[in-house]
Amino acid sequence: MIEETAPEEPVPFMNARYQDLGAFARGGYSVIHLVREHGLDRSVAMKVMQEGIREQVDARERFCKEARITAQLDHPGIVPIHELGPWWFTMKRIEGWTYRSFVRGNTWGAAALSEAMEVLQKICDTLAFAHDRRVIHCDPKPENVMIGRFGQVYVMDWGIARNLQEVDPTTAGTPGWMAPEQARGEACDVRTDVYGVGALLYYTLCGGRPHEAPDSRGRLALARIGKIRPPAEVAPGRKMPPELVRIALKALDPDPARRYASIPELQADLRAAHSQGWWFETRHIPRGTRIIREGDTGDFAYLLIRGRCEILRGGAIVGGLRPGEVVGEAALLTDSPRSATVVALTDLVVRVITRAALEEELARSDWMGALVRSLARRFQEVTTGEVDLTFRE
Image (tube, rainbow, N blue to C red):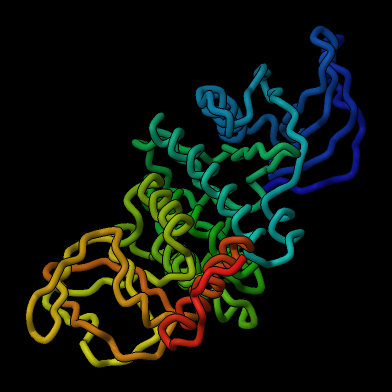
């Protein structure tokens, strides 16, 4: 974990190549200094092992391993490593804000949430790249993500990163954020980082960490069993998009087999929520279910994501539905009875569009909301016969 700290005395081993400009952050076993590299006339960050642990072989090996792993990951979302010394290394200087500061500094609302989802997508891009290189981060958390002034997003602090084939029996990590298998010292894989992204999404939605207790020992105990509070309990006065809550809780499932199998799979659901509406709940419906009955009333419609339906009127088949089509949309605008029955020919995945959810979704775009509300008013006027459609100059 990196925390802000007061400046310290200059690094004693600094040579003519670097000028120490003071420490600005501290980790569990290291201090980060801002230094001036004279030859290239640039400022860089230098991560230095604290003096009291430099002679510990295991700590020094872990420190050098962090530099080597990070140096092998050539990606815009990973800070480049410049030079490795015996107990220090230099890297690109990053200026910006942590994800924690970003979330806490934003007023909750549709625009801020959209911006946060863009940041999470970039985090997913970075972790997916690392996984492709057989490296897992093992410590995604708000303090380990930096956001630059121009939208750059960096996944920081690869100090406990592992190769995928590596089994580490320790419980290295951050108790409030780590996955259950990691907290128990079991084998970790890409789904451990899936859990980490789920924790970041959870934090974005409710402002809390998944495992909350008065101290780190209590948080570690909760992490080992994967016990988390529902986001609505953490922030009871906040309206949260149900689809984003569903994605977060799936990524945070205590059983890795029930989580997303990979970061790209999680990322695909985040993209779908953004494009199809994150206020519209995803629902799985078994084959043979009558999802709409002729003559019933209701205030919801369905967007078909996967599967096929047939439409019946008076018992006769009059049509069908395929993915991407909407059924029952008239109920969003009027209280008239359903004009047909819709039956699932296969197992379905649908998005449920209610009037309340539609209002929340339209709030994400002022002009689109105004357009749809205007069209809805015209539709109601036409269906009730209360409008004169004669064109006038």
